[in-house]
Image 1: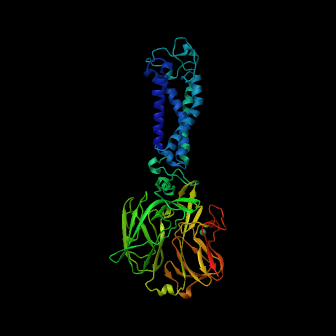
Image 2: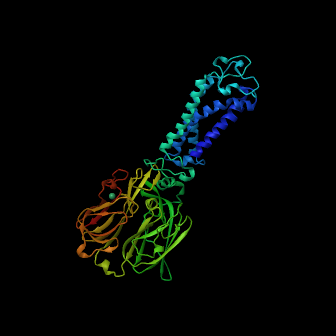
Image 3: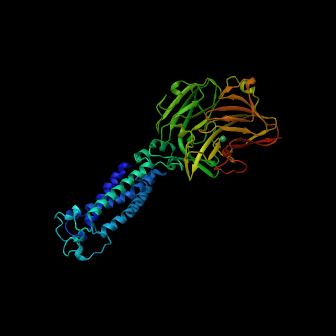
Length: 517
Ligand SMILES: [Cu+2]
């Protein structure tokens, strides 16, 4: 941005001096080109200072504002901002130009002067007025070149004021925005409304919080599409082989609310990976995102190189590349997988899924005597004006939509059961920011497993609300005691709205347990 200023100042000055004043206005000035350049140097410099005083803050604040496509010369927005900057620049320069024309320091485009006011002497002659020593009364002598009608104090004060104005045009916006950033640093990012961007906010922070570029979306999921679909493995020599592919998609969290998302296998959440304790698995992850990524198998004990944290145990998977994870599963219970490269951005945009491992000892599940098995994956979204930003606990990053398994109520999947039946609900904190107190109406539930570990019978809590924090899993058994519609919802009421609107008795993190007699 600083460099832009230098280039614009130099280019503006050069254009004004060498082309506009000296070439186009040459006839009006009379004399040779070089003479015209010499004669108009000071007036053009004063004019450029005032242009800069108006142009620089306009451009800095608009280009480094919310929509940084304004910094990319390939974007129409860049030219719109440039034009506006030039218009405002001309406006700020206008009073000084009027003054200079009145004082015969320069010709205006629309100046009409008596003929004898024109410079007619050989302009190769060093113009006396360049030294500012023109007597105020010396104007208007017939047959002589234009003489500056300025006093010495005026000729000191006005340039000083214009330099000051130009400096303020740089210093003031530099207090608000990071002028050290270039278009390359911010990459045409579109920032969420309300994000705090200070003079020292790095470009990396902006890119991290920016919206998904809508042009990156390669697929539109059907409005009725559901995430968390079981992923069928291929058996290769006794190894279960799963293929995961990341890409940018359009995904409906409500029938009338579409987000852009980072997705595994074109669904949000990613497909469900079902394993049996003792399985050997190979997971081939291909990256179709515009940025590097990795996958972490949350809660599983795997060889370190298979664990997934970018830069820690592996090089991130570059766009277009793939990486193969392979390990033997030695645990059972409710787990999840998610990106471990910039998860504050990528997981918030949808890169997560459930990983359910059945115990080798089937009795562990049988003892829980449930007829229904339901996964509840939580998520927070920030969608405004057609742009999807990663929801973050930062100014401007707070979510306005919330989903269970990729859908907000009333589009969440209801749970259907009969009186006296038991349901195992696997709450998974796939979300990034909030602890969600998940509550069920119609009687307490028993927490039978936490983070994939069985809770001994004597230590099981009976609760009707459980705090599910990011990364946590709680498996609870709820019994349908009475027929009717029983709500399962987060107990932070804002999280049960869709952009602060309650629809059909809820929103966001709400679903209905529909119990038949
Ligand atoms: Cu909540």
